[in-house]
Amino acid sequence: MKILGIGSRIDHPDYGKGVVTNVTSKHYWVTFLEKGLETIDLDCDFETIEAVEDEVDTVSFFEVERSLVKILEKWSDTHEKVALADKWKGGKLILEPNGATSNKEMPIDTFFHKIVMVRDRLRVMEQKINSSKNLDDQEKIDLQQYITRVYGSLTSFNVLFKSKSDGFVGEKGK
Image (cartoon, rainbow, N blue to C red; front, side, top):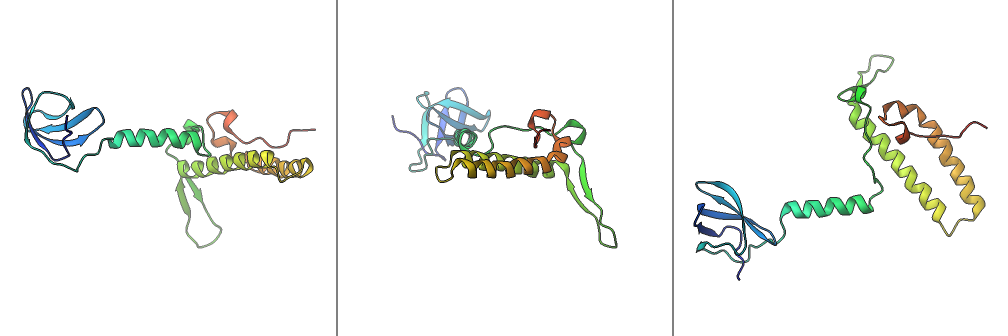
């Protein structure tokens, strides 16, 4: 069986005349004049009006995107989705300087995303320190204490997190 390329024209017994607009490993996506976009099996019964060669993409954009998302979720330094507290959704952060200069505004969602990135990168740094073979145990402890203090400095932003478990935790009381 020869696979048709994108742009090939076909005549299908049920859908009529159409043009192949995408090719996956199992299907043709065909835009038919009368029926619109339909997906048909590669081995489906149809007449080839005009075959286009060397234009075959055997993996659809959707499949590539889905694979990329899975890879990023597996290997990136952000493994979880963190929710913004409902009361802040759609809100904006306004920084109002003292003086004649104008205010700085940004959506809270954008600011929250940056806070989450800082948190996730601190976690990655923590993991790298703990797994480092170049640092001795005392150096790891010292660096870990600095990271704990950084977390403590960032606890003010915990009000933005929907779930308390997603927020920053600093040094516990002694």
